[in-house]
Image (cartoon, rainbow, N blue to C red; front, side, top):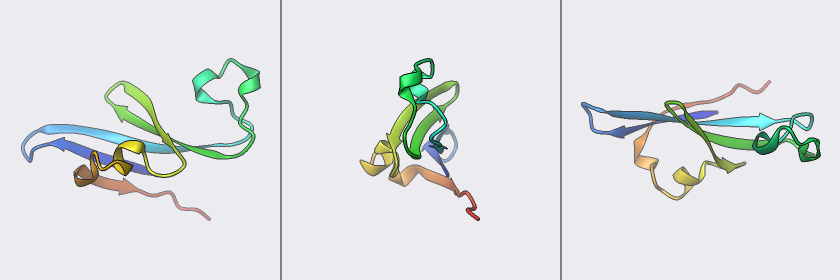
Amino acid sequence: MAIVLHLGGPTSGHFVTYRKIKLNSNETNPKNSKNSKNRIANNINIWFRISDRVVQEAGYDGLPNDILNGYCQDDIYMVFYTLIH
C-alpha cells in the first residue's frame, strides 16, 4: 500500500509518498541490517516516508504516524492498494 500526498497549493507544491513494506521473518530489521541478532521473528509492516532522496521510517503496522495525528489527512492525493490473492 502507498499513500501519495500533495503539500502546497493548486499551482505549486511537493509530493510525498508513504509506502508500507511487509518484512518477512527471513529479512532483517532495516535499522541495523548488519546485525544478525536483529532478525524479525514475525511478519511486520513498516511505513516509510519518501520525499525526493530522503527515506525515513514513519511508523509500524497501522497508518503512518503523520496521518494518524491528522498532520496531513487533507493532503492525501492518491492511495495505492496491493491485491492479495
